[in-house]
Amino acid sequence: MLKFFSRYKFLGVVMLVLAIIIISIIYQILDPIKVLPVFQPNKVNAELVDSTVQHVKKYHTISDFALTNQNGEIITQKNYENKIYVADFFFTTCQTICPKMTGNMALIQEKIKNDSTIMLLSHSVTPEIDTVAQLKRYAIEKGVDDRKWNLVTGDKKQIYDLARKSYLAAKDVPYDPYDLVHTENFILVDTKKRIRGFYDGTNSEDIEQLLIDIDILKKNH
Image (cartoon, rainbow, N blue to C red; front, side):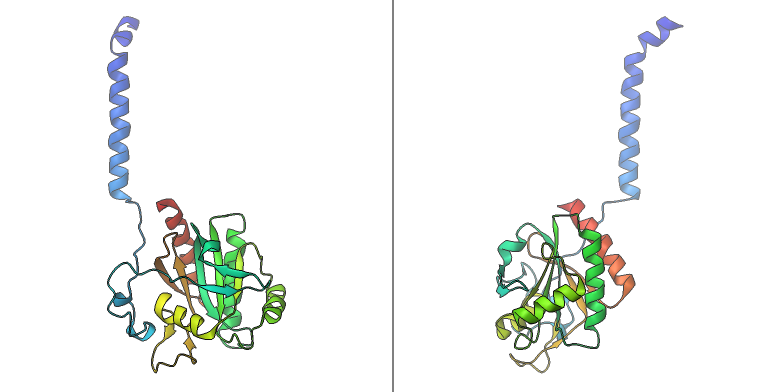
């Protein structure tokens, strides 16, 4: 009996390895790796896309920027290089959707606090009101972690152009470079500066989906 097993031991090992490979292939077929879409301007609601980029079908990325955060520091895309991040647009005196959005962004911050690959970025749409000092007060009040989350202010046209032409997160009708109807959207951006998802920042189910999608992005990077 022992001679029989020793004689066929190698064959048994080979068969075991083949079985593992076959099971893995079947598992991947039944449960394929999830991949998030890459959002292009021509596939987004036209109301949220500036007319100058509505025709874009591929290669859309977030434009370079230089804005000032709650600590008076200049924040650029260098600060978000090789990071996955969630962006939104708000203002500190907003009494409608912004408090809920900020609360949900704080919830995301708590979930990612120990993950150095994920960051947050909130743009003020009233930079004339949201000075550095105002943003700092707001950041302290809302529990913002400076290492994870930048609240930024700066040139109004730059912020509005970012909302309309890069993040596709502001209603474009009627167009006015100094007037903006911002949305409740949270925008998920990957390490290549591409938009990978839009989420209602006031909706708890959307926030749960956003956290799931962040994990999917991490697995695919």
